[in-house]
Amino acid sequence: MLTALIQKTPCIAQPRNLRAFRRGTEGNVSVEFAIYAPLLLAMFASIYTFFDAFRRDSVNLKAAYTISDLISRETTAINDDYLDSMYEMAKLLIRQDSQLGLRVSVVRWDDDDAKYYVDWSEVRGTSDTTWTDATINTVSGKLPDMPDQERVILVETFNEMAPAFDVGLPTLNLDNFIFTRPRFAPLVVFEGSATGSGSHNDGGEGTD
Image (tube, rainbow, N blue to C red; front, side, top):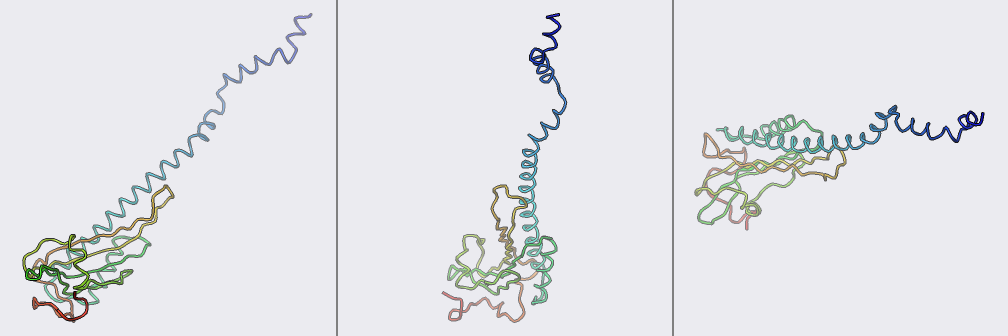
């Protein structure tokens, strides 16, 4: 009789229930998901953000090379409509909502002065500053070594990228600086610009 009473007492049966609870596996998947899901989501967000940054940087660079290559093949003077179409094409290639800036210039090297000079420079989009004879030499370290009176087409694109997720990556400036020699003509002329003589303006605006 005493043994039966002890077995029916709740405090005596409690350790057996605890052991059964400890051995139970029901709900383990839900608990593990609650623990690991935030870590997995953070990892996926980081991977996507960094991949998107590299992808967009590559797309911007390819767009700049495409514009530079197309302009280098021209044998006749280009005009505002032509550059407008290049700008619209660049936006289509990038296919992003962010604003794009484009600057196209033709730069010439002069051996006598040991300086670069600007035949012409045009901007589109968010770009608002053209190169001049006075400013182009501030980036002379980025320009190639050239023979006397040789010219290159300089194409620059400017685009900002806001990361898709906040993973510690700041807003990136996807700027490109591409130069290409004219392929089929000594230079690419812009309508209305005084280029092609091989001389430069020593007394006008934009000189040292």
